[in-house]
Length: 190
Image (cartoon, rainbow, N blue to C red; front, top):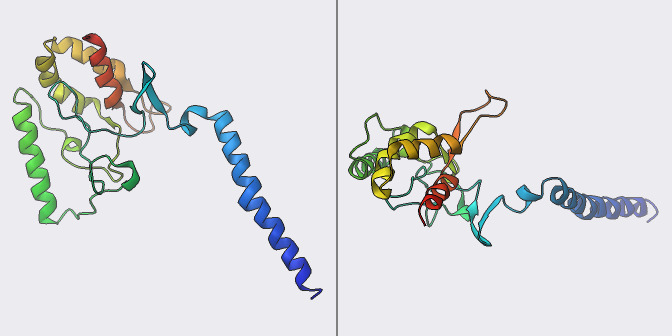
């Protein structure tokens, strides 16, 4: 029994440290140092939550820029079921999905002048990408400008303003936050 007492004491001590003190400390410090991120990086407009800066949303109206396709379970852009389609590049089902997306985008964007960016027809690994490249945004610009009755130059200005530079100028690629870009478009017209 004397040999079990130190083992139980260590078990209780480590349980308190790793199961109580450490999680509490990381939560408190996270809320203090990174409050916005710890609260979900929410975007608020007129005291209403419009979404998160870090989670994509579905936009289907012609007047909005569209995000990357989502392959999350049950419903598109479901943050509770983040994940890709897990279809191999050799899977015929993936080819069918991509061909259907290409046809739908071509029909919705008849005035697009360049080759279609691949990210508009393929889902990401998480299925929740919040951003697209500037090329993908500019590809959709003629449709959005026409649907809103504004010039492509004005839409292009908003795209450039919404473009986030890569970390340290070279780690990654420029990204346009689709939700923030669409909110900027909505702010142009009441």
